[in-house]
Image (cartoon, rainbow, N blue to C red; front, side, top):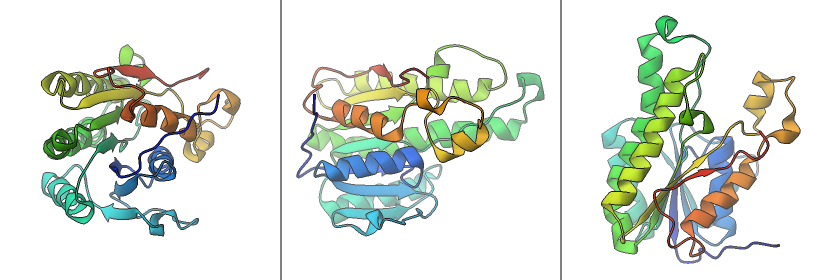
Length: 235
């Protein structure tokens, strides 16, 4: 079955847009007709010129800093006139040590990048999303469903994303929708480098996750809010 989306006339803000997953989601929104506000703390590697395309604007901002988040969201609404969708994609992984050997700086870093960015972007976007009856999709993780060895702080930060998603959905019932996706291992160049001996064929590609994100923002899922959707395929 061929699935297509029509987001013509809408505006999507994608955080973490310089990364593999964020970039795939930004491109998917653009391909579906949306205007895209692509945000990240680092400039993108724009070899294909996507970030210079019509209907796409890049906003450099540190989404762990509330003033920066407020500035970017205000600029997006000023530039495009509205905001319909927020994709909270900014995030990272750190692990390798048990809790009693984990530095407090690692805790702060993971909660800042994975959870605080999602909180601040949502906080400042929600008033605009209420006006358009829009949607929020954030990235949790399959591993957040249970404890595990060596990456407990990462798991906890992603569990927080899931719980805040449920809270946003409950607080805005009937006004806007909020959902999360839960990847396992994503097929990115960085993950291939870190796990060179793994079976890459079982990993989910960023473009596949992007389609699920668009589905959750589309009219195809009008009664779905507060969900944590598995997107780990066979991984």
